[in-house]
Image (cartoon, rainbow, N blue to C red):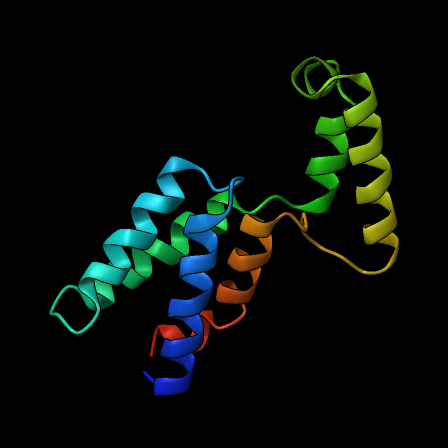
Amino acid sequence: MDQKVLEDTVEKTKELMQAPSCCTEAKSAAQDWLNALGTEKEAAETRKYLHELSEDIMPIDNLISFAESADGKQVLGADAARNMADHAKKIRSAGAKYCDCPACSAAAAILEKKDLLLK
């Protein structure tokens, strides 16, 4: 793996792990990947990590659907849910494919390098 790609991915991984919106499973996969760097487990952990990120990243349309749902309003509160849906629609109209929370932003940056990480 290219050193610059590795450095960038490690940086984004640390950002992901620090993000309040990062789920436990993604944090665990991120830490396992970091621990495996430079070992015989690196390739396998890279595949697991990328799979976890692809499962966890929130597509923008799913975010809008959740924010507009009864569950979204119950979890977030009516005002926060409406604000989240409005924000998500705004960024979708600007071309966003995914949620722009810190965890999803870091995951998207890492997934953009997927092919390079799997080399």
